Image 1 (cartoon, rainbow, N blue to C red):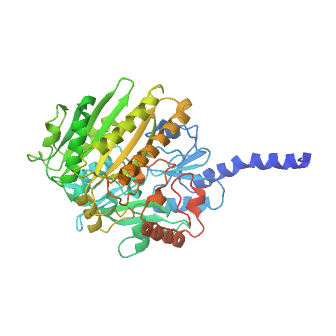
Image 2: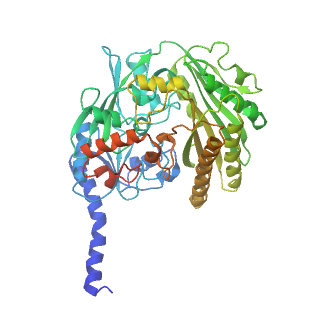
Length: 499
């Protein structure tokens, strides 16, 4: 039992904790860094800029918004003098609590790192992590016109976390992952040092940042290769009713397996809620209109279309923001499947769909719930382009077509968090079991199946599913640049890279 003196000492220690945390805020403010406190309008506005309202419910002690790599370095250095945890926020797309949000610690916002600088000589663009992809593309259009960056498929997706998870794009079958198009990372390391990572400097760090998450440093600028985009583009949506599911899944299998045109891209999404049950398909073609034969099997299914020719790539990205649900709580999970061959057909995909549908049915009593499953093609041509541009930690094989499956729930109230968490686990674990069952039955090839970080649930084992050589390489990099495990111990979320 504690003595009176012991309780007094404990009380003093506990009372001091908020002061230690508050001290980092005042220290950074005194250093000239933009600091927002809970009483400020900007503080509260920033907490609304998450895709999941659950992340916005977490209240940091203050928000630091450095405007340069030097100021970010100062933030990291000052964090060594306190014990508080911190999180770094870019666009707020990742819904896992603590990954880009924090309760009672320091939230470091990259919103003031919002630069777009175009280099006419090598046709690269320096882009800050504080931007959304539509802002980066608009900045590029304003600077030069007729160039594009490989980035998010919805314009409102942020840059920072997306890039560190590799980043899937409508342009990926032409140019690989977004991360494959980075020519240089400007990085603040665990000791506050500012370094460049590229093909000539800190090459191991350069490689490990492509799919390595927040384990190595804070990226303050991405120098990206841009690509020609002088032409109009085509895209929009097809909407199919739920009774068309067998035909839709058959068309999906054939499209991914045969991949008719590298300029084409789709996201095939089914939505299910209390009053909602239909498919929304995102279509893209990198030209004024797709040639005959590219999307014909989908077009042949009875549907409603909003596809059109867009004047610019930016216009298409901006239009896709319509599908971002603001104000809801939101979760995400993923699984990876090889594409079944023609003999097997789409029966395996139907099993995935049925499992998702049944789990979603079980939670339809949750207020405002909407479940979605998105089938995202990763054909051989995508993986080959990634390899051709230097590769990445995912190291997806070039001899196998894949589909990366995204699993989402959105809902209204925190009281249902546990119920949705349980449904999420049942959903992705069951999906993984179905993949393995079909491998065991010989309906699918027994191949390497990494998880896609950008879509992964916080409980999923990202590093346990990645190529062992990639993990070994990344761990060696982490130990070299952060030997004390600063980012492992002090950030409030992320997939930890430990020995």
